[in-house]
Length: 173
Ligand SMILES: Cc1cc2nc3c(=O)[nH]c(=O)nc-3n(C[C@H](O)[C@H](O)[C@H](O)COP(=O)(O)O)c2cc1C
Image (cartoon, rainbow, N blue to C red; front, side, top):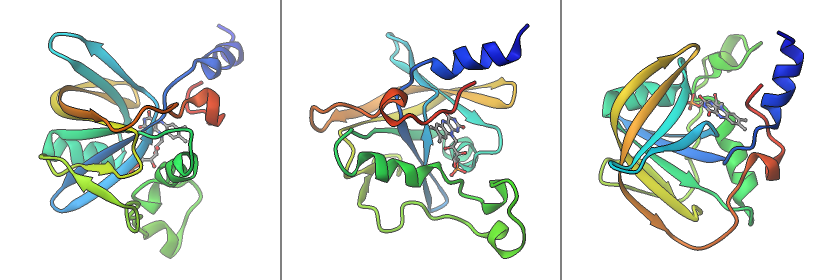
């Protein structure tokens, strides 16, 4: 197998870009994810693949709920989204040592949001959102796929959603 070729192809695969909201023990968090997709009509199921050490996954294991926020290509969509690519734990950032490494990022600080019935955040800037109740955790290599039943959601306004093609940000490959 030509690994470099495989990576190049996987890099080109288009994805949507979402902010996954979670909450556990009063700790409310958001993270950027593009490995998100609908996986069943009846019941309506959605799957998200999380890094095994994502704090979001830790929250979801505890609360068994999460939200998926769709941001639009309009301002402040991309700038707002970029804030959610940093991990909750500073230790997760490669090369960080000392005090910076032990820092915790409260990514929702100063960002307007409301909470769903399960306590997960819905960003005020979101063009739409879904709320999911966890059905299953499926181990998948260095990630864990979380399958959730969609229990609520709103299309707040019609707009062009953020995608990997639009942002140029890559996670695959
Ligand atoms: C464009 C982009 C897409 C990403 N997609 C995912 C994803 O689908 N799953 C994942 O676990 N991490 C993904 N990440 C990495 C997470 O956003 C990052 O690890 C995040 O900081 C974890 O947040 P948490 O520690 O607060 O849970 C992506 C990062 C970027 C820049």
